[in-house]
Length: 92
Image 1: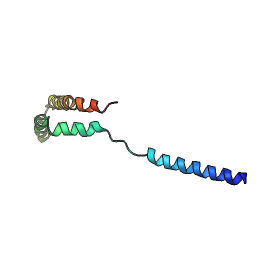
Image 2: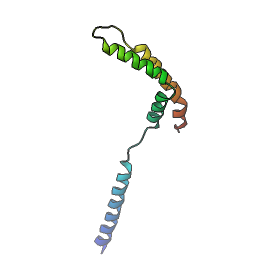
Image 3: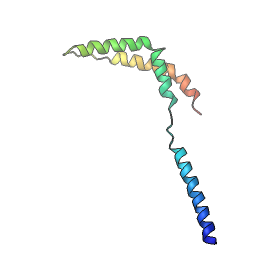
Image 4: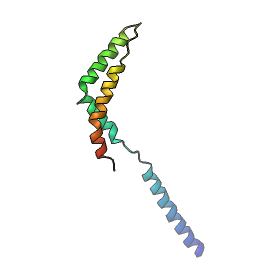
């Protein structure tokens, strides 16, 4: 009789452990990614256009020393500046 009770308790504990394990496997979504994408599309579109323009110009040439470093920095600065206040609202 004691072994039957022990088996039932062990089965219940193992079932709970399996159920908890499934809940922990849920993927977390980083809200910063969506916020930065929104900023890139809306607030920083002029910087994105300048970066795309530069990128097209550089890739069309076979021999060039031009890079789009300045345009990349401007674009990332804009995205970070736009997104920071919204991202910090999600920080606990």
